[in-house]
Length: 115
Image (cartoon, rainbow, N blue to C red; front, side, top):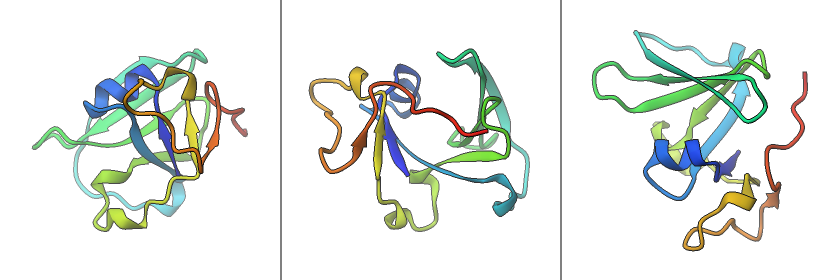
């Protein structure tokens, strides 16, 4: 669980960061259709943003560099209080008015990805 301060997440959330939860894709069950939008990450990987086709809310992301992982948008959870950020990524891109929580582990960019 962590906050991402990259430009894409800031724009997607219309805020200074996005609250995200990386989980094994096999642990998630989704019903219904999603709309998608793809873009290239700094790493060169493809990030697929998945949206509700009815209301437009971003629900989760997938990164081609992290197969088998789904990144949930914490604010869409039925109980968003379970979200407890442990890391801040792209801390170097944080805006002056939304600095990373000093109690989180901070990465200047994206931490190394497991494969």
